[in-house]
Structure formats: structure tokens, C-alpha cells
Image (cartoon, rainbow, N blue to C red; front, top):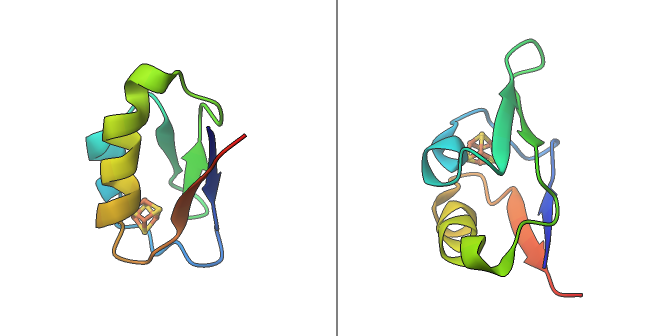
Length: 65
Ligand code: SF4
């Protein structure tokens, strides 16, 4: 899987970091999400999926390889 974040949609809520802090970071200066690990291992799918689901800005997605 590949994790994609649309920084144009991100509103800086930072909920994604709560779900998967190893995958999602935050650029405080720009106030947007930063994908730390764009290709996380399959074991991380549940938490990454939760981040995608709960992002209030619908800024996150998972693309399959
Ligand atoms: S939860 Fe969504 S809006 Fe909030 S920082 Fe993450 S990507 Fe951005």
C-alpha cells in the first residue's frame, strides 16, 4: 500500500498522528500533515485506515500497489 496525503485539503487537525504517529507527522510551520512513511508495512494497515477514515478533511488515502 501507498499512503497519500493531499496537503491542499489538510486542515491541520492532527487526528492522523493520533492513529499512526509512525506514519503521519506534522509540519507546524506549514500547518499540514507530513507522510513520514509512505509505504508502511501491512501490519500498519488498520491504524492507517483509521487515520484515513477519521481525517475530517478527507485529505488522506491509501493506494494499492
Ligand atoms: S487528520 Fe487530516 S486534516 Fe488533520 S492533519 Fe491529518 S491529514 Fe490533515
